[in-house]
Length: 410
Ligand code: GAL
Image 1 (tube, rainbow, N blue to C red):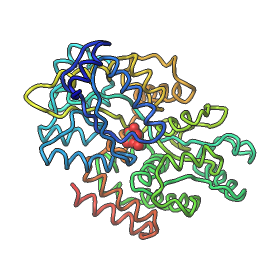
Image 2 (image 1 turned 90 degrees about the vertical axis):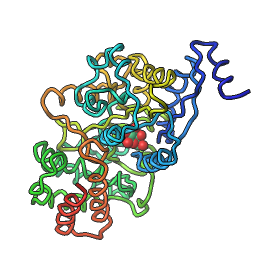
Image 3 (image 1 turned 30 degrees about the vertical axis):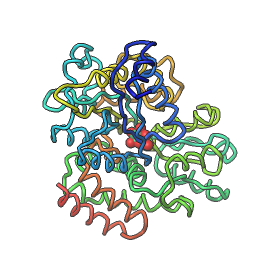
Image 4 (image 1 turned 90 degrees about the horizontal axis):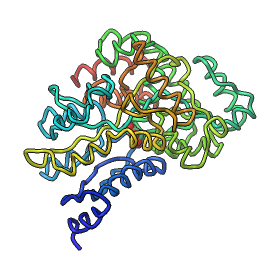
């Protein structure tokens, strides 16, 4: 039986579509795969055939490389998981299908927060459907280990360092980390927000102000990164983020600083928030949220958006799906009209924090996750942050390199 015939058979449960959707994504960890299954099953229930195109690599760096190759060879996938400025880059190249008619019919304008619409729309037209909002400035902790060592949730940088030191003295890994540029940058993002505060963050990472980039505050941020580096185990290099999460789950490490996709790993290991693990904001960023949103952009396959592409976008935007998916993924809904009822304590906090940060002007797109500046600038920042984290640059050199490489990348 051909693929189309299979799709038609599946369509017995609902509408049938002649074409499958081929979905390029980087959700390959245990927790991510569970969340993706919620989407797959939702579509299969509607008779939409799913061709999986996973590209492993947290943060999507490798996925974006594969996408470029596919588009260059004239064979773009139907739908692609994408972040912030990448959506804008592809829209500017004219590669994305226009979802405006459907967005109008389904009232997306009224329910998607403005901070997300900025990335979902190009020239006033919807070109992507947001599936979630992740926030990146979280710390995940092993509760039992913290209790044993008498460590309370650290409220600021100094308390965090005292806690890390206690864990080290007990012979455990204080900070579970994977040495990959996007993970180093995730750490840096939170340290920068905690050290410089929101105005500094905006100046340095969104406005790319050379003075902020070259400031004493930036040097202090790099100095703090060097402090964190001393609390990472010796095998950190190249480790995937979910393996770092596993170190916290197993009690080998006390803390991981990571976006709330990490929660998906705890849940996938049958751990409960407040009992087995703790979630709290990176010390010093309690009032701020740095966010990224996964969106699905549909690659233009002809002049109009395909029916299966439209069906995928509708499924993603449905309130019931946004609840079911994000409960598993660790993120929160990309719509403001979804109840927090089904969410656990970390999810409820995530939703409340997002709302409060948006209302008080403390919501910022994450630099590490493509929501503060375009990929070329982000990658230039990654290079400097990683070289410094690996000891190739001291803090003064890192500050100089940051200023220069950001200038060149623009
Ligand atoms: C982020 C993405 C998340 C999560 C993470 C690790 O870029 O937004 O959904 O998957 O990467 O892979």
